[in-house]
Length: 211
Image (cartoon, rainbow, N blue to C red; front, side, top):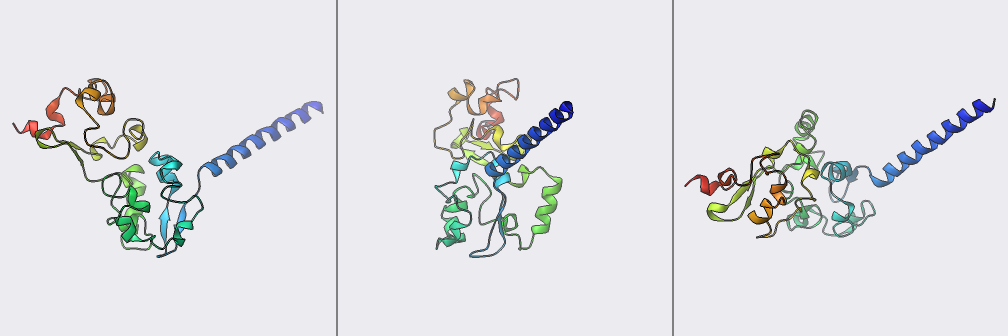
């Protein structure tokens, strides 16, 4: 009898632990948000941005968005024009850090043409391929300009590079060959073992390859 009671006690403890874990996960990871103003059916996924893109809560809150869900709808300028000026979602969705807010409408607006194609692509492709920037980043000038392609690095998740190796913004002169050769930035992988060495100049500096 005492043994049965002990087993029941252990089962109850395990049940409480799993329940608390589930509650903790729910409190840490909010669900999707559907905006209805000023237009209806705009979907925001916390999972895609927090787990997929490895963004911390402080990237958006409270600087870009208040933590209260949908409170931004009360702002008079929560519209596409503001996004184009770099506010709200437009702070990242500018065509460089993430896909531009004036393109690929069906990724956010669930009622527009192209939504079915986007959903079908998301099912067969990588989750982060759905959000990965499509245009290459151009860093530097002249012969030493570097063209970085997110597509060529599609085997990685966003969190593999951001924000441990790279922030989501770039300042001119921030990255140097000296720092790369010390294992920072691109040099964390391009060391001749994980990927080709940073001494292979023409692999990245496209102007040098034309000489």
